[in-house]
Image 1: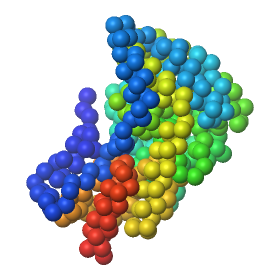
Image 2: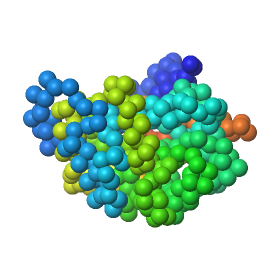
Image 3: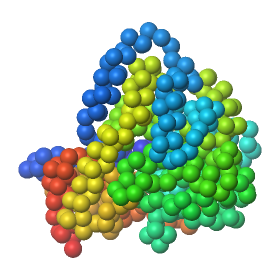
Length: 381
């Protein structure tokens, strides 16, 4: 198998011969990792349950964690799940990589479609399953939303959406998600939405694909799955707590597969994660910080405040040259958008010309970095 280097590896190679301006404190706005302390009550739960390290964790997850995750889904999306409709996972990266391998193992000449730009694990799963790939391009013309093309979709076995979207910040409405569910049922493909940024919204809550499934009467979530994680919502990526939820018939067999994968979360992490999934107050606090950062960006760069995520997706023309100049002159690292996308069948890379900026620092550090970015933009205008 041949995998593309990760975007951050490409960035390192791009900047390796550049000496940054030491006049400035280094600012790294490349990775979607919240730079805030994990809330104290979550850390306490982890410490209080450290003695459980002497026990093997169950692949199915502890009852306390499954209950907390089901409770989150019910409180947040108004969707009641049974234990058979949800599986705790070791974050979402592993499930995004191994679920397609499980699902498509017996499929001859599998076809995967996913949004482009994308989280690179989607591509890794496509390579591991030897799938033909259909890119669902996200660009300004379609308001950074994947378009439904039935001629392409009818040959798909698995379609991965990502709403709210990393990196473009685009979101799909409940009606738009419902249309995707209708396509999954009509053409009998599995539809998975990566919802890891669902809780980082700036105004109103973002809908889930599970809500959309119920809205059109698909109450048992046939062909429909979602994944979610506490990494962003709880500033706790190290807890590696996520879930996959939806179609119980698919999840029943996937659960058997997972017993062989060996990716059960250690018990202290599960108990701490249960506390995190059960609390909304700390998430609301985090949202306010990200919202403040977006307001700072609007004031300095004139950018619109997106509906969700903590990213800015900005067209700077030649993103590679801009990224190098920004690092050299201002000691700020951002990620070129073309590293997060691929050329489609027409040779178009929808990430080209864009940079992704992760607003994951404190408002003070964010303001400082954005002022430097503004200076760099002014230099080229």
